Image 1 (cartoon, rainbow, N blue to C red):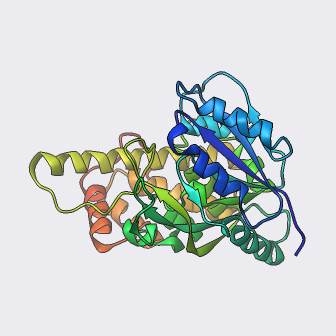
Image 2 (image 1 turned 90 degrees about the horizontal axis):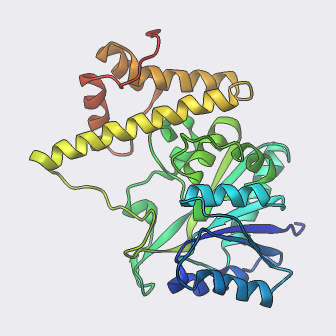
Image 3 (image 1 turned 90 degrees about the vertical axis):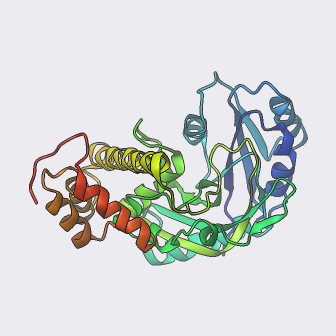
Length: 326
């Protein structure tokens, strides 16, 4: 297998506390051609100085972008994506630690995908994570088990539409998928969720079942590992219901944006699936909403989550309406 440059996009903001450990883990990867492209989003601590130190120490392997703050991880990663130059790209958070074989395993899976589907196909690989505390003590050997995530859902658009499955810091993507992802709309909740949807709708995905990242949990995580919710009642249950409905609206907005931005490029069957997903939340008939969901397989992982989804759909439609065609 030939050696290809893998560019790691590192988005930072006030991350000085854990950043050095993360950067060292990336520079120590078993893959021989790993380069880092970093961008700080206006940190007030020593993050920018630390990044500049690495630029000076490793000028051939470490670049740093400038620019005004964009105010969030998604925008910061989008700026990095716009300047990425390699054929293969990974995404790095500032507070994790990568295990030595992380890039190698992602690229092995990528090359296997390319052998089956060709170099022009948008491709993504991803892995499990080990959930750890601030001191890197293991909380759970598997993020997928900890959060009750079924990773195979990332391979099926109908399952991916209603849930976030792929964690960005485990991704490896190729240039065709990166080019698609650069056209990221406002409706995308996060870069990794949008990229996973693009891969499911327009490309191919493979998983690495091992945990290749130590996913550090601490008080400053932008997005963290969330254990499954227990049973709640009263006001807490009402808040949980409202949260599910708000999340459903966000999912529908992303499905709609996929059709708007990439409608001419999405295969007909996948486009029809996106349209069915919108009808499953917006049909005037609760019976039709539930029926479409069951027919198309728009399920959540676990019986409890699927039942909650069906209950929500049976009671009321989404705020926005579409033509009732099914």
